[in-house]
Length: 378
Image (cartoon, rainbow, N blue to C red; front, side, top):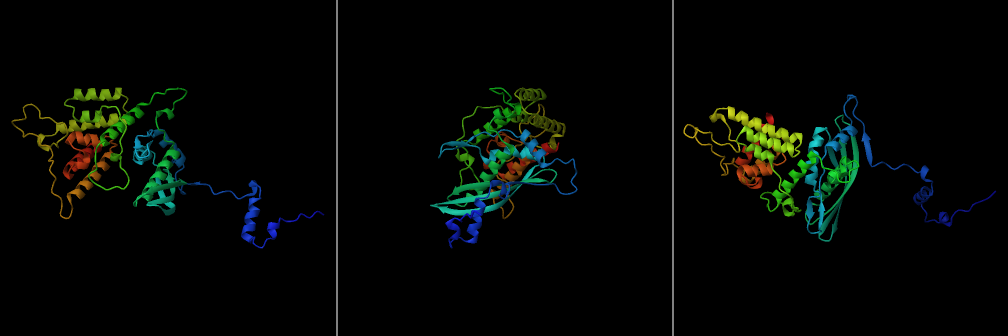
């Protein structure tokens, strides 16, 4: 019989049972080791869910098909690099996720703070549950890290984790080269991509040089970052709102279709035309003022001239400051524009009233919000 002596370490009294167990596990073959808990977990749909309800995998595939590219239109001047901002990513994903019934429920699985000189370093692990229409979900853990001099490091870490979850889960490309490019060396961007790119370029141009009126932020906002120079594109929606005749509107609509505008954008143009036609068929005293309306010939003597909404701040209720009223009105306006899928809200408002949203009074913001809500109901 052959006796194999143990390693001297096993006779060392300093080797505790816990350390011995770890040593045994380390020398085990890989196939005998316990499996690692996966980072992504699938939770099936609840009992009683219809069998034909789309599962989360199908819904995610639909979102991936409809999601538009998100370019690196932001720039960090201090460290000299371009990046994709969380606001642009959420704007690109909100519509497709609503369309396919996908939503994300975030929770913080782990949270650590530590001081690094004058800054606070935050390390978090976000746990995201991605639900589909059937109620089933995917659970994924995503890390996030951020530094800040004040109290915004946790917010930054959460934004970073969410941004990269959306990037990797839905495979968001930077430009149109990653979308059905086939074997082409220089693929032609799709019509939807061109329209989305034009809208994003217009938003970047409007942000240049503007300063915020409301709110305080510890991190740099989009108005503090110098956007890249972009080419000027026509705003067909604003031109349609100011069209003086059906022929003029038809020419604007034809130009938008020829430029490759998506079906949603053309439908919004048609909605503006219907709204203005309905307003023209109503008695003059019942009409609401519309941007771009002109008095008809012969009405100057019989009907008073159309008055534009007052640019003076309207009286606010007691206990509410004009700043608070304007903030509430702006929130209502942006919510109405989001429901109407209105991408050029800031440009349309400034073209109609001659000043940006962040400098407008509450009465102007509420007036424009009412117009959008009426157009959406038709």
